[in-house]
Length: 321
Image (cartoon, rainbow, N blue to C red; front, top):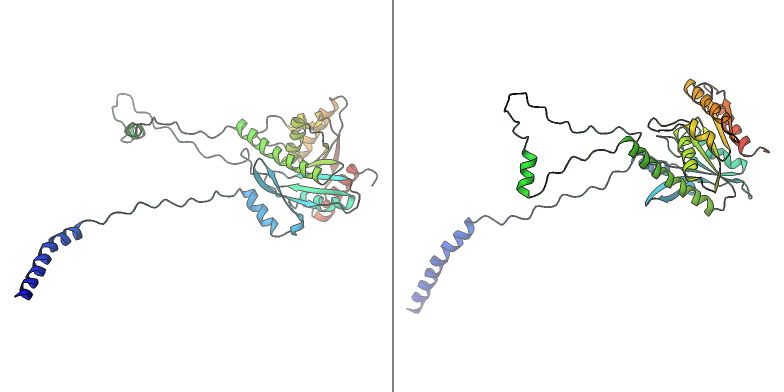
């Protein structure tokens, strides 16, 4: 009898619990919170990618990591081949050029140590003023007169903002050319400052800026705006003015209070014409320390052209050599 009662109680408990189990089984499973999308690291600038590739090709002893405005950047350092160096030449490449650019930059940075000058070739940041800007958002087409038709999504941003309690924000506009050039100058000047600080760290007796292409413009503008006491001379090789610049090299270089060597290639009509303008401007400046040198160029013989450039720069830096 007791066994019969026990079996009956088990059967009854099972019957009572079964509907509850089925009800819970029909309930949908609780959804897991959506996973946050993984944040991608910011993309490197093209100049930084080029510098990393360059660092893998050159001896580690030449690689110097400098800091400017909180950003690290690479520079290439070669000490002078003498126990008593004359000074340090800080090389400023042109737009789109690396710290070891094969035209002018690399030949000079590797040969000038033979003449007693150490070299520090900088990596410049990507320039906003030289980059293509994204297209702005086009405004909606105007509604024809007498028509009450309105695009279905014309008021969508306003309605969404009203539903969320926030005011619609205007579209962010890209910086204008003047602001872009100002930002470029600030970043480049910070890197030249870092180069001069490095020169002081290695106790360079003389500091010379050497700019190639548009790098000549930035070096000249740096000396004009900052007027540093530690940088005493400027060498410009095939100098060019950026298209967005309000003032050209003909207004900057001849007015500098430091000696300036302007080396240009006569075979390039545009460079020859711009050089003539700079020379005329220098003649109107009393006490100008500007000088100009024409290179004839050696078509098809890069080694001879590099040697010609090196001898002209060396001769101006160290006339007695």
